Length: 390
Image (cartoon, rainbow, N blue to C red):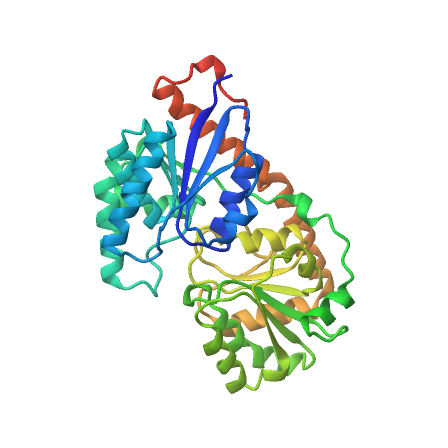
């Protein structure tokens, strides 16, 4: 059976985008598709995907625009595409999409796909940068054979920017590997490891410490929660440029002895069971991997109603949604769950059922394979009868 070569291109990244790409590489049908990866040499994804059947090309792809470096990177990507007989170039995110599309054109690659993981119109993005991104994407859209959005909300934004996209725009939800959540956890020991008291409630957030993740909103809601539940502890898992600022804010709000900044951790499924309420205070989300992980771990979740999150959580059934930025109502929702253990159990169990039915990693991978197949048929590399069953 012929294998089709797919080159994934990724900028420096952690979190949901990294997990998405990692899942594709781990669960793809390797008898039909040979996946290759071009990404920065210092990323954790390289060590995670060091498997015999995966070819990785370390390439200097930077998160910010750097014209001289970017042009050199386009040249490297062009050579990789040509020398490895790439059938489909699949880029993730705007920066990788921009460089990847130019390289795919120069190399004469048969097809190009871009996956959009996040919104570009969040409040913290400068207006000039939004305008530049949109202009670049519109110019390069003609060279795109498939555009993937990770949520319907994101797909609607793309339609708004690009106008009529036809069948080239598809929504493929992120998926969770539920095997990772089949673990036995000693919650008391894990709490001690994280510096938490073993018997008091934990309100947690797992996020990159950047403005759009809204961690400050939880800190602002914390005093209100402590008035009702003075023994509550706050666990903040993640790293980012705002860490020192958020630590200073916690001290200013009198939360120093109530808050643990745990840094970045790889063992999310092992510490989620000790979290009594998981908070997702993001101001902008394509489709939140952390929310899916919390649902898989049967955690009651409180989240801002933004982006693709309402496609995961139904208010009162699988989580509690509050208006974006309203930290007072965020705090009230957390208190509501802490006051009502039966509500917490109801939300968590329902959330787990939704993940099992609609957001498993196998479904995400099969839909991506189907997209590859459709494009390869369109380009004449595959016949209809050899299609992949979904």
